Image 1: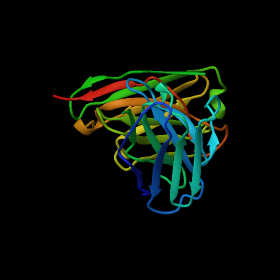
Image 2 (image 1 turned 60 degrees about the vertical axis):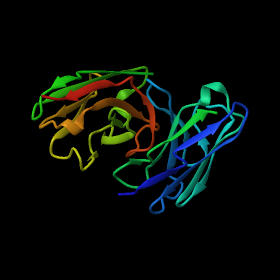
Image 3 (image 1 turned 45 degrees about the horizontal axis):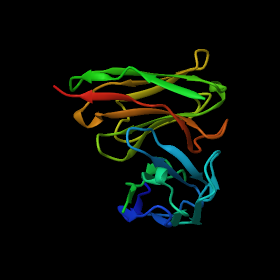
Length: 107
Length: 121
């Protein structure tokens, strides 16, 4: 099983600042990584797939990068609606696995 | 595109439940589908996947042998039969559509609102 480790666990930032979230895989997943956003009481939403492709309707301030074992989600100029929990997920192997999540909270 | 889950509830350990998910707004019969769960206050856990034509089915180790995924493409409905339920199966269960048609498990695109399963005596 591929283990995904996200860091930091919590990120405290102010609106307008840049958020940088990390996801590290226990073995290479090539570029087969996605990022999801989840707000309290809501289902997750797909943001990024194949490491760097934005899903339909996702604002350009969200970007993803990386390959192999190290990946980054960057949110440029945080908007109030961006404060949420973010998960990475790999499709390199079965079982599909998620990271434990990074909470982006308002400072 | 919409996914609506039902069938959750409270069940005793060792009991069974059958979850359903009715899909609309897309050609259900051409997409793989997932069940993903989230225990209270915890992260996301992939549970199972079924390819559009049922030729490829996968389970997490934690549910293999107890849960069965199936689909009825004529009724645009996904199912999850859950047997021998344990306290650790307590979670919100989400029905999720694959991102791309015809693939053996790509990414999790559209999510339902979820149905809550509580296993408790």
